[in-house]
Length: 355
View 1: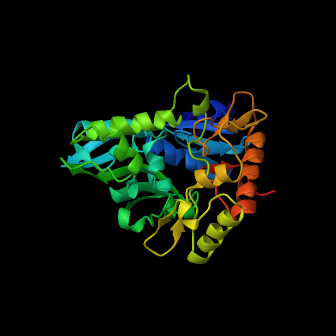
View 2: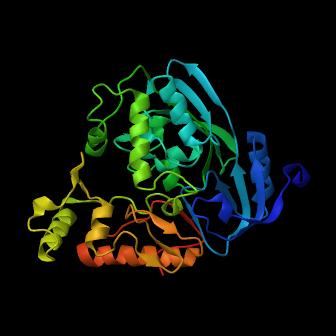
View 3: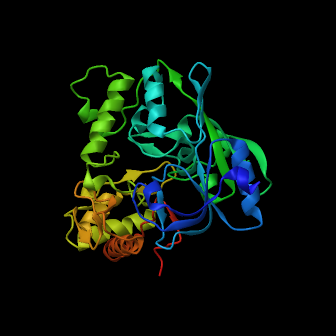
């Protein structure tokens, strides 16, 4: 079985991530079929741990690499199964799916344009931007349950979606996503829920889905949130921290801290969103900047993007250890200033923000 899998050894993982950081994989295999994935998992079962790798856009790998099998999922294909119904293989680049949908006037993911990575990663993180989340349009997720080895189909309602969260994220390593079925809205109206996006489209009276997608791409490019080899700020995992959501007591404490520190004159000047459950969400970028971390901050071979405080970038000669040190410094500064702890959005492999 090993020979049919074409297992390689000591493969550098840095080029397979958008950060360009990380050590080698002890074993490595590319899988373009579900059968190959099953064979690879079976091979690793009694030998070593296995790490699933998609587009590498939401992944931070330690400098020591991964002492096990890295399984690069390269399943491809898109299948229409009804009006607005689209099943996509896990290895399909996500932005290509957005293009496919908007060109057919299928609404539901037009605001998720330009997000790097593969389709299989979208339900894990419940990818979202500009007022949309994939949770709103996922009908089901097809996966391999690694605890039983069986193929399963999980309805969207059973995926436990939350803000940048899902049952897949809360049960790390259990499910390997092989395909996702989306139910989009044929000829549906675009979602223009965010003020920033609405402002970008204010001269367009009735924007089409394609126009919304293009506006989102322009906004993301301004923040270096679109992969571009010519943009030094684009070598990142996108937003490194999630926006913190806290209970009412913690929110009030944060507001008081902002006033007491002279960051704002009144509590009303602190941006925030009240959630349906009574909790409050604060913008992590605002907290980071007001805690004294500026855009363009440099720390050895890594730094903070000059365009977006949430993006930690690899400047080309850095290490994962340096990136983690910077992330820890930012997290601790926000705790000291506001009493709120930021949590990383990407998957950390072989590293931790905790000492």
